[in-house]
Length: 133
Image (cartoon, rainbow, N blue to C red; front, side, top):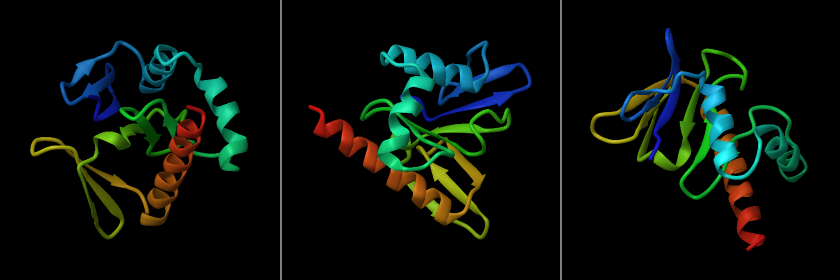
């Protein structure tokens, strides 16, 4: 299970094992898309009409992987968080604390409203995928 993917000085690291990927976080997401038989560009093109939104589209690949970016998708500082790995959420003043397990936590500057919108979109995409089965 991937908790999140974060760019650092020498490339992207995949947590919880802090495994270096040798690529950027966005490239890791693109490679995960390919493993799930789609491209990131094709996925976004397919999802846009379903959710009627154009920005910060979460990448929902399965019931195990549903990633959203903390900033713009192409921003190097963006962290890709796997919604399915989140165990608990603590809303702070201007941040949200994502708790994955007793060892891994991540505090991100993200509004409650923005996060709830992302969750709503993830649920819409999951329901749509379920309706195709």
